[in-house]
Amino acid sequence: MQQTTSPPSDTSAERPSWDPRAHAFVRAHTLNGVVVDCCLSDLLAQADALKDVDGETPGEKVAVIELLLALCYASGTYPTSDEEWQQWVGSGHPLDQVVSWLAVQPDEDWDLFSPTRPLGQNALLGEFMEEHGTGPAQLVMEHSGDYSQFADHHHLAHPDPLPAAKAYRALLTQHVFGLSGRARISGKKTLGPTITNLATGRLGGRIRVLALGRTLGHTLRLNLTPTTNDPQMLNLTWTQGPIERRGFMSKQPPRAVAGYADLHSSLGRSVLLRPRPGLSGDLAHVDRVLIGAGELLDLDQEKHLQDAVMSQTRTGVVKPLWPSATRDLWREAHALYAAVEKRSGGLYRRLAQLPPEDGASGRTFDLLAVGLLAAKSSAIGWVTSVSPFAPGRAPELYQASLRGSQVAEHLARSLDSAAFKAWEVMFPNPKPSDKKAQIIRFDARPEQWKATELPFRTLLADVAEGASVSDRMPEYTGWLVEMAQDFLDKRLDAVPGNGQGRRARAAAQHGFRKFLTGPKAPPDLRDFTIGAA
Image 1 (cartoon, rainbow, N blue to C red):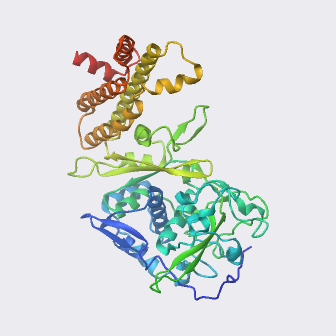
Image 2 (tube, rainbow, N blue to C red; image 1 turned 135 degrees about the vertical axis):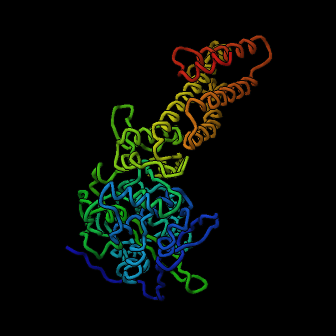
Image 3 (cartoon, one colour; image 1 turned 120 degrees about the horizontal axis):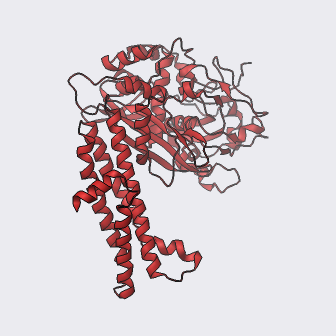
């Protein structure tokens, strides 16, 4: 049954309107490196003249691209088979149909501040805004802090408004990446008890992978999943449209996904923004917000997680690759390339089928991986990594990333062994509670991991450009070994110059070299050591 609503009670001031089709809401980069402000119409009309869209965070960038993909499906602009997708990518199939479709959509469907059907929002919250709304900082995940309604959130009372463009981007990001937790809104005093139960967003808790092409248009075509007869159900607002919305009086099961337009525009939160005119009169701002539970989708792994890289936890659970606070995302590049080589998912199967471009050598696009790192319901930050890709070179890139990772991992274990050997000499009778802190003094792994990213990316870039893996691995390995030795020496500078200190230094260096060339060392390290000797 379709829900209805009445205008919010706050009608004392004239409500501004704001339409992202006409107002600049995101920055984009042109092919010659110029940064320009764009509205939706410009983004799509100039998609093949723009290199990329920008975002204040990696998640915001992903959210904008999700919206553009949704518009492609809603307008009927999508390939219907893998073969047609390959033709679209290779020939640069025009996106004019999306632009034409967007231009004729009713203006009232695209008003961010409509009193009855606000864009991307739930107008049913309108009557509760005055009493229960918070400051706009709650809309921006990185600024809101813990979602819990029982925590200290005095900063949310701050009256500083958000420009409408920034609020809209934050709204899109909430819908796809929102964290689970208990919302600050009162269920008893608003729409029902379960509106406080925030679920993890569709892309929350996992790594989202996008293929980034030479232009924005190339990017969109690469990431369109072929399908036939998409229902073209776009989620423009909560309170009107063909999709029946959930209620909040009881827990609701996930609803079925109604095509890819629905998937990429799903409303993961019930949000309402209160506008106020800007100082110049026509630049709208948001000064209060309400955020509660939104839609729950019943996702099919094969259809709706086309980009997911499946990984196994320590307990044996297989799930999409997830953000980690202890493991940098670039270290998972081999998993991306393995997915292409093994054709293990929809996106990766299609990428593996792309032929090298005529007359082209080297990388033609990148694989962007993005995830939101969180501690329960608090956002910590974004993790992101860009891995080069060239059609036809997936096996070589997989081998380079795998061998490069093996060398880096073994070097880190060698440094760990060296730290333990130094600790044994310097602290012969330690308290068990002090052991960890004492070993850290000699552990050069943090410096090594931070410094390894550049050599690793250089290795992949060279291989994507056509270099042989075997030719590049000795240089890469030598680079890492030299850095590791330098970092270990600097850590050992802290030991005293007496006999005990000299013994600790000698034990650490011997332990490092022994582990480095031991039986568990990968072939690239053993070959390098023998050659260097």
